Image 1 (cartoon, rainbow, N blue to C red):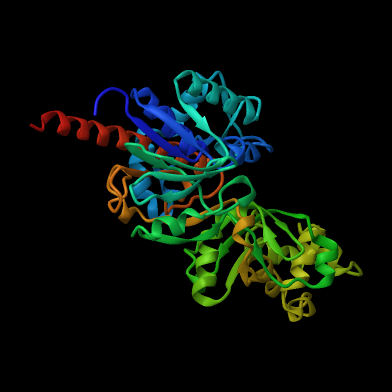
Image 2: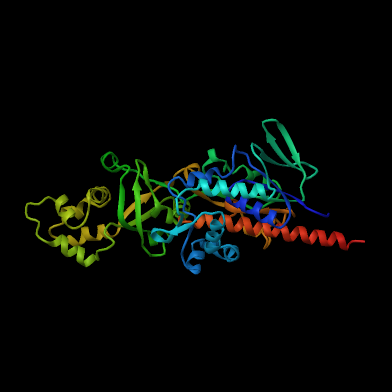
Length: 422
């Protein structure tokens, strides 16, 4: 084993492309394979509304966004975190800025210029791309097997980095087919589940006709403590859909809501419709004489817009309205802790991302599969999840780099062992 070593990267999203860049920089011949007609399709779609590249948050809270997998993700972010990602983008001529809520965006808010520049630099570094190549597993002799429009193709390589994505947005290439291929080889894979997703509930026809498509903001929400919530409200906004709820605040709570539904059969989401007003202050406002003013106008004077008032009417017990003039504290309590019963997640293909995937227990510290030496995994196909806000992309970039560095070190160790052999 001498000279440049041939390495396959399967998957042309951010994790795969970062792996290819790292491998090429180490002097290896790199071949990237992707089932789609071009690379980075999901990356481009995610950037249509403004590419949220990363998050300008202090390191400790940044890492905490990865929940139960924070310690597994930590070393990857230490090697390539938010600041490094911004410097990397700058190296491609893409300036970034910190927007609202510390989210980081390219100056022009677009994904396409960054991706074009990146692909051009990779090609100049000698990386070769093979599109319309769908990976179907391994042959008996260990060769990688692909189906292409021109027929089946076998590829023999010295190391492989898998960066195949999760199971959401199937039309863009992340279809989760790889789970069966790895499971058949003895790899421990957690079932894929929707993450950063919407949820369903049963709305009345009145609410659907008046509020579907409308935002609820500002609002705070939490998973009820009875269903395992930590007691803390998060503030933000969400959208009422014809069949449930979605949006950034819901996505931030999606892991806890999904797990509660799995355990209890449903999840109670508690809403604070007026997060900037204390319970006592709200009770005092509701207690103010309303004369001939309607309840709706009285609620509006207390700070509830039409959407929030309709939502309150939908979910609060009738008795709380009937007793408004005598017991305003009852309705105030509903406004501050309004319960919404969620019955299930929306389908995985509608989710922004997925949870589940290759468990870290199936990998060594360099992200190599212990059951398949020489095969490394990166990106969303690993068993982690994070909320939107730049956290997803940052971990994909960081894990792609970490897996590639693991492959570089593994290949170097093999080469040294070969040279040392008699």
